[in-house]
Each structure stands twice: as structure tokens, then as C-alpha cells.
Amino acid sequence: MTQLIKSLPGWLKLMLIFPIFFLNGVLLSLIINRFRELFDYIIIATLVTFLLKLTINFLVSKGIGKRLAIFAVITISFALIALGGITLIPLMGNQLGNLSQDIPRWLSGSQEHLANLKNSTLFLTLDNAGVNVDDLFQKAYLTLSKELDRIGQISLKVLTETIGGVVDTLVILVLTIFLLVGGDTFWQGILSWLPSPWEKKIPQYAGEIFRDYFISRLILAAGSSMARLVVFMALGIPYSILFAFSLGLASLIPFAGAVVTLIGTLVLLLKGWVVAVKFFVSAIVIDQITDNGVAPKLMGDKIGLNPVWILISIFIGAEIAGLLGVLLAVPIASVIKKVIDDMRAGKTENEEIDTEEQVEVLPESLA
Image (cartoon, rainbow, N blue to C red; front, side, top):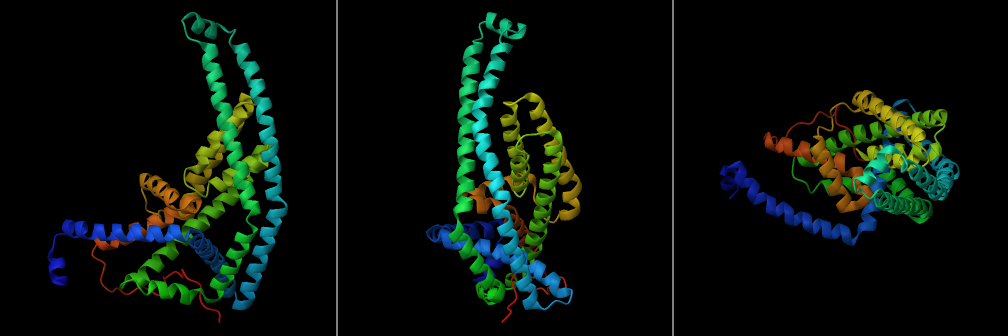
């Protein structure tokens, strides 16, 4: 039977395999949806563990004991989380609340400005031509008001849920500590079900891609946030902290920064076109510098995905797992692409993996 399957053309083998993978995918999706919260905890804790492990390995390579390195990294991480919880998050929440109060006032001011524009030659010409300028303004005003109010409500809800998720945070922290201590046996047991050589290749690919992707994204997010904060404050843009760090967080997701920039420009346009232009131009310039100047040096071409596939993977990730799916969509899609490329190249036999180049994706046991 095996020889018969191997003798079939490649396209026919794909047609036979696809329904099996599809049914298994549907079954896996049902299981994940049934235990969504548990899977979210495990995935987030694993991702945090992976990032912390990189720092721990760096400290160990400098001669620091492994247990001391773990204690130092966890302590510093807790301190940074606490510092952000008592400084940055309240500041952003306060500015978001003030912005939601200022938007109606800005809308009123913009309405008065538009009323003055209606007396101009252009608008009088349109009115004489039979174009109902008043109706267009009214519809645009109502639509913009509703959209801005909806955006404000969603932002406040997300911020409130983030601050209020104390129990979720504690569960993730506990899981992270356990994975740091004995996560190797947990993941090795799961990966042992994969056929050879994929039980070694998939962790290797995942380790390389997740490391490069998230380290570069975090560096870009932190650096661009600080750069935007300095530029926005220098240009006198209101709510600089809120806009700077919102754009920084959005940069963790490909193309999300452009959407947030557009929303911020529309909001500031209500205050005045000068401040809106300052915001838009400065945000675009910083984006171009980070995306075209800094990002290629950090990331290179290791993701290897066409921009169209990046967008498709983001939409699929959002549909399957919401915000967490959006964050993980691109690196997971890149791992899948590397596996498919190997399959198409016929690299399905046992192959030696250079242990010196293999990237550790799972935490080593410290017991």
C-alpha cells in the first residue's frame, strides 16, 4: 500500500492527503474552541517562556549560574510589569479618557469650521449645481461621530480588560515558571508524536523564526515608540504618550501601524489640519525608517512570505484565535511554508540536523 501511494503523481497524493488534513484541522479547531482559555494560557506562557529563555541563555553564556539567571530574569520581568502597570498604563488610560471627552468638542469646532467653508465660492458653486452640500456634511458628521465613538468604546474596553485581567496574568506567570523549570519534557512528549524527521525539524524551524520575528518586532516596537514620543512632543501633538505607544504596540502586527496612523490622523483632523498633517507625516517618516531601514537589518528575509500571504495569514489567525492569532499568524505561516518547501523538495527522509546551528525552542529542564 505504501509503495502504491509513493508511485502516485504528486498532485494526486495532495488530493488524497488534503481531505485528511482538513478533517483533522476541523477536529483540532473544535477541541481548541472547547478549551480556548486553557490553550490561550499555554500558548502565551510558552511564548513568554521562549523570550525569557533567550535572555537566560545569554546570561548563562556569560558565566552566570542557570538558577541565578532564572531568578534575575523573572525578578526583572516582574519589576518591569509592575513599573508599566503603575506608570505607562494609567497615563495611557488617562489620556484616552481625556481624548474621548475632547472629541465631541472638536467635532463641534469642526462643524463650525465647515459651516464657514460653505460660504466659499466652491461650495456655492456645488450648491447651485444641485449638490446638497448640507446633506453631505450632515451625513459625514454623523458617520464620523459614530465611528469615533465606537473606536473610543472599543479602546476603553480593551484597556479595561487588560488592566482587569489580574487572575489571567497570575495563571500565565505560574505556567511560565513551570515551563521554565520543566517545559522540555512537556513539549518533547507532544512532539514525539510527529514522524521523523519532523519531530526535530519543526522545533528547529519554529525556534529560528519565532526568535528572529519576535525579537525584531519587540526592538522595533520599543524603539519606534520612544522615537514617536520624542517627535510628537517636540511637534506639540496632543496625547503624545497615547498615540506613540499605541502605534508602537500596533507595529507588533504587520500593517496594523498604518491603520492606527490613519485613525489617529482622522481624530486629530477634528482639532485642526495642521496638527493632523504633523502627526501623519511624522508617523509615516518613522514607519519608513523602521520598516525599510532598521527592520531588514534585524530580520533579513527569514520570514520568506509574500505580503499577500502575510495578510491572508493575519485574517485567518484573527478568525481562529482573535488577537493572539493575529500576533502568531505570521511566524506560524512562515514555519508552515518552510515545512511545505521541504516536502516539495523531497526532504522527508531522516536528515542530520547540525546540532551547533539548532536553535533551542523549548526550555531546558532545570531540575
